[in-house]
Length: 599
Image 1 (cartoon, helix red, strand yellow):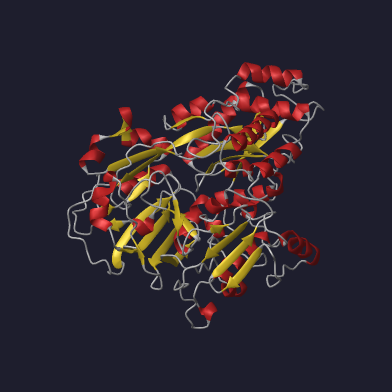
Image 2 (tube, rainbow, N blue to C red):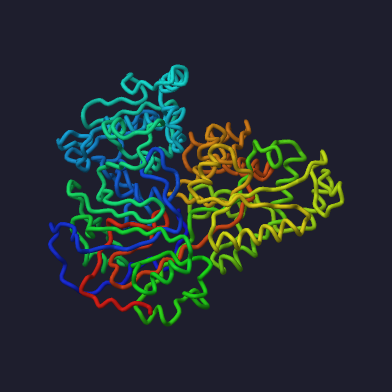
């Protein structure tokens, strides 16, 4: 069950006559939003960053989705005709795809309309397993499908994955029917099939536009409500409503809290807005200023500018309230952490000395100051890898170190990290200089983190330097094992918590597992936990994994964050979804309302 969040009601809506349920998206309605980090590209099987996947989510279709209005969250069919038919032993899944869903028009289809079929999902999932693709979504299907391991092994041997070879574990029974035969029951598979990584792609598109790895980052062609109209990398993304999108109606709710929402939107055809304009504005001040001037319709409140927007009790400042701005707030089902490259000669390794170094670094970093000062009270110290709001979080468990610089110094002294050359800085036990090198992006907010890290490390006599690059470049370096440390955040797109533990699963090293952590007991427990339903037995295994993380310290676990979304009153239908803060296909704009901005 998800943790309750504040302001679950929707943004206030004016009493206008509802337009026809059959109306097409209005091309003159342009929703303007911002990303604070640049996207990397738009291939659902190749993308791993949250910002690319916000866009992928509305261009590509998974078989299932979380219902937009239901709380608690529940999974419903999307392009599937119904929920899966699952055998009693949980190992055979039969899924029907709805007829009449079409890809956006593209030259790859030779001028013909291209219908979505079961084969498109089978192809997309094989792409994830193709060694050449190096998909960061590998854990979705790796080791799960009967007969697939042999096909993957042959691909590794020959350098070519045979997409046409029959596989018992992934069968296309007919044009609209998939059958999965699993090696063992996987109780989280349904949640996995709501993610963008499991979305369908067309083989013709990949073969026409794919790069050497088969990635199609710049030519997205999906079946979703929007398609890519314009893209200036790291600057601007423009989406337009797809004219081939199927007939999808606004979801219904019987919750009294949604009464106004249903009065406005019930039965209307989606999407409602013709154009989505996404600007990449990395610096917080220009992003907030753009909102204040009315150039953005809603934003995440920048963590370093919370005091400019909110005051005591997390209420809006009068100038925002007077403009009709609405605040919605909830705890993010995610975590921030600093990972260590376990293959790095300085901070990596599994010996007592290396573990001691990582633990000392963790104890010397002041998470409470980060939460209180940099995040302006919009975060709290994280007790464990799995955050609140997802399965597996144990409120009674503590698997993280508290800030204690004196204990950090004592630990370093004990394991030989002392100042051997008397230059004022600690050295490695072998006498070589001890220098930490941490990835960072060039932004005012990151500079605050860097200053805190430098001050905290200097306090224990440890030098730290910063590798400054744009975020996509750092991600590429991280995947190639070229970074020593990097502070990141991950948030879940499902209510299942196992994905956070998957960030440290050995076979995911270099993909989702950027720390390159490999530990046999951890990997065994991870595989076993995925074969159990949510319950006490699974929770026990997940806790054991959290204990292993605490013991080896491949991460310095940092904070759980709060999401603060502010929106103008002309944005209609926004209901905070902590798993997807950009629900564009469900939103509308009141073009008749006077645009009174904050300034």
